[in-house]
Image (cartoon, rainbow, N blue to C red; front, side, top):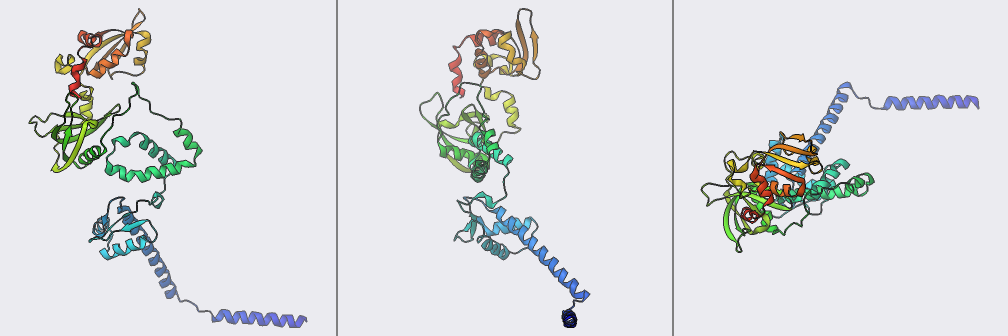
Length: 382
């Protein structure tokens, strides 16, 4: 029995040995060729992935993008390909991603309306919170061209936050509260708003039917849109009128537009216009008819305000201007020295202190704060 086992082992070993010697042995040259082929295939796969990712990134929602345009963009990005390659990529990607083509000539492609955004890069929780707050607070100020692209991200953010208790806790505990009396925003004609934003975004002129606050009937204007400003619940368009040789920048409340037509002509922006400088100069503060009698219509005027200590305490925490100086007086009052623009907004704000405001200089400012008879005259500017 033992001898047989030994022989069986020898035979098995011999057979295994024979089988091993019968296996094909690669030469050094053949091994190098296979390795090179594997490396080339890997590089080709990576290049294809990068190219197809670029193809997907060119597609939009609600707008067809032509294959020729995609091809040209890929060429600019450094891809050495043919138009036929782009067409093959799109047909292959359509089998795995929610994209669709039309029957036009040349052919166009886009993301499907119901395409979930997880087809694109992932969104983390911090980004989801940011998108959620943008949707809640800034959508009124964004043009349709941008909103159309952001809506899928807003949807993804909501779904991303849906199952997160931590981020929901944050969103439920953060609000933006107006410092003035809350008002309900006036109705805005959505077509007019969209056309105004579109024209501003693409720097085109508009033909508008607009009703001024002191008129009962609308007038027609051709405008050069310059900027959009939200002030409280009112959204204003800054624009110049083409029939005005002085090109004065005027404010138009969006809710007073009855209709807006986008023109093909390019809008003209005044030379050296800067929105921040315009706002810093107090141009949106609406000049008070009496204060406009002062030098430079009351801009950059040194003022002196005397408050009761209790009324003026908030100004020791939030300054009126960078050069503000606070003087605490012996009679339990305080005096504020600052340089500001004398506007109707300043007047309304000072009236809010009531008897807590004891005096103001220049004397005309205090007179205006106490006298409300000229208030109605300012409405023509709004």
